[in-house]
Length: 325
Image (cartoon, rainbow, N blue to C red; front, side, top):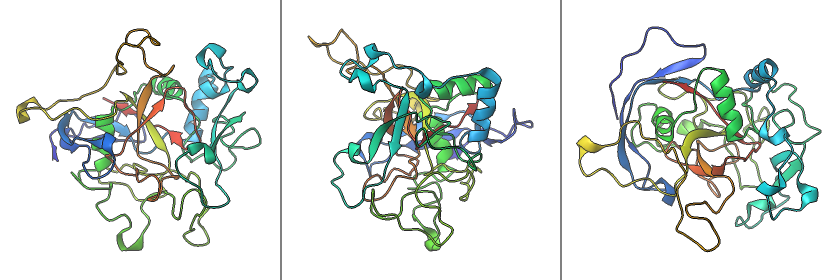
C-alpha cells in the first residue's frame, strides 16, 4: 500500500480524520467469492468520519430538518406486489437470537420484520434510545444515509474509499489491525463470540451481550478510524455487483477513484423489461460486518468483505459514516 496526498491544514468539520490518497490491492482471494478478484486501485486523499454516525448526531439532523426515515413511512403496495397488504405497515428488520442451534441456511430463523421498528425504536415499538446516544444510529435505509450526508455537507464513501480507509495502511492484512483476530487474546472489534445465532460468550461481567456498542469502544486502526470492523455494517455509495472487475492489463491502467454509479443490468427476459433488475430496489454495497458476525456464519468483519443490501433495507445492525473529498 502506497500513500501520496499530503495532510491538509484545516479539517472541514469536527470528528473527521484525513485519509492520505494512495494505491492498494482491493479485495481478497481467501474468503468469499464476491471479494474476488484482487485488483489494484488508487484513491485520492479524503476526510472521513472517525466513527459511524451516532444516534445523537442523527437526532440533531432530524430535529433540524424534520426528516422522516424510510422505516417510518407508509409502504406503497406497488413496491411489494407479493406481500400481504395487512403486513404493509412501517417497520424494519430486527434480530432475535434463537433458543438453540439451528440450520444457518435461512436468515428468517433469526430475523423478522417488526412493525414500529425505526431509528427511534431500533428493536421495535417498545424499545428506546435511552443511554444509546453514543451508539451508531441503526435502522437507516440508503436514502436516509444520503439525506444525512447532504445535510452535513458530506457524502457517502465509495466502496474503494471505505476499504482503503479500513485497512489503515496495512495492505493485504486480514483485519484492520493485522492478521490475528485477537492479538494477545484482546478483542479488537464488537463481533459475535460463540456459536451464532444462539450462544454468545461474554467477555467478563461488563460485557453487555450482543448488540451495538458505543463508538470508539475498541482501538482505532492506523488512520485513527474506529469501528471499521464489527459493530454495524455501513452503507457505501456504490451499487452492488457480485464480483470485482478483473485487474487492469497494466499497472498504469489501474482504476483511480473507481465507483459503481448504476446497478447491473440483466439479460432480457419475457418476465422483465429490458435492463430491469429482478428486485424492485437495487442493491448497494455495505462494508465492515457487524456485532452479529461470527466465524461459524459470517466472517465479514474484514476490510475486503462486502455485502449487498437493497436500498430500502433498514436493520438493527446497519449504519453509515460520511466522507468529504
